[in-house]
Image 1 (spheres, rainbow, N blue to C red):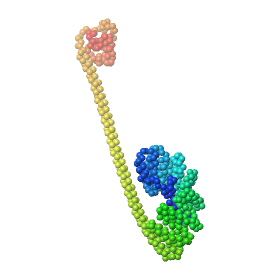
Image 2 (image 1 turned 45 degrees about the vertical axis):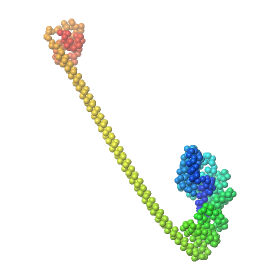
Image 3 (image 1 turned 180 degrees about the horizontal axis):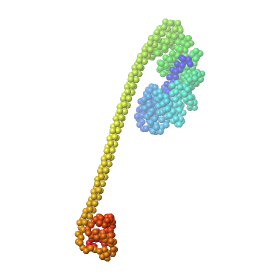
Image 4 (image 1 turned 90 degrees about the vertical axis):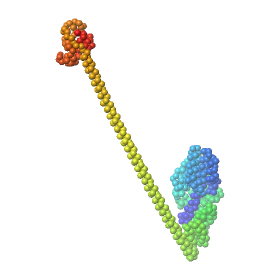
Length: 510
């Protein structure tokens, strides 16, 4: 593409993007029916949590997002409030509108992925609610999103879908605007000036038929970029002088006006019309001085230098060259100072970032130390508790053993006491045994005659020894038998004599 026309195309597209964003809701850029103050008053007068309040919140968010205010922080705050209330009320249109505003905010913030995320959410709801114009607006915004990063390949399909919807809905403004966007996308992506011209002319025709003067001027300026500066010079100059100057004055932009004068000069200069080129070079210089923009002033002096040089007035051309160089030196000096200032700011920023990093690392180390100390304290506490638990278990076991020993000792003492009692009883028994007075020796046959069950000879022998007062052991020793045998004989003797102990036995046989 020709350099001059490419510069023009990009410049006008910047302003066209501004208009497109403002008109995404199918409302002309000049339309301002409400203000934030009035909307906030309405909000205070309507405390009910209903769909009306959700709409007011979204209107406030939209107003904050407009170029004349452009307060994205407040815009996001009210959009999120509207979204939250719309969700509570299950108000689909309110949710979609809030998502759309949040998408626009994300786009302004440079978060294009986030913008497409919100746009797609809004798109889903609007399609479900059968709102074609709102769907077209969302699709158009997604196209602008891609166009802002010069991705015209992805932008073009969205514009094509938007154009279809607007044609179905017979929406003149949307049709003209979208044709202009498609023309520009084709011009930049495909370099196809013929096809681009077709879309620009169709858009211009639609805008003219429907008295959309602002849009007609923008489309005319985009259309200029497709024309040949030699063969179509008069047409280009005519459009710049008409639509270009008119639009620049309407939006009160001297930057825009300087660009118009610059391009009019360029077309006159290319066609060797130096007198008219000089007129617009002077106008450009005058505007540049009003703007106090060194770069514009420098470029304007360059225009003057070129024109005077071609006209043969070398002295004046040299004067403008000196002016240009002096301004350029100022610009370079300012750029140098700006670079130094930026480097200083960058240094201070990096210094603060490093200090913050060191502080973060210090905080991390302190936290790690605190965590370590806490773990150490916990470990010591757990160890102490375990130690106390072990000591307690040992003490309980020791006490249990001690109790066991004491119990065994008690049982042993009881056993000894029982044995003592038995011995004592035995002693008492012996003590109670009367002295045997010598009597005539009893005969076995005589005794058996008196008993129902006779005694044996061995039992009789044991009985005689018993009568003499011998103990069981003494009887066993004398008879050369075991003590158990003696006891067995005694039991049989007691049964046969019908007595219970030795004292009764001795008495009976006596």
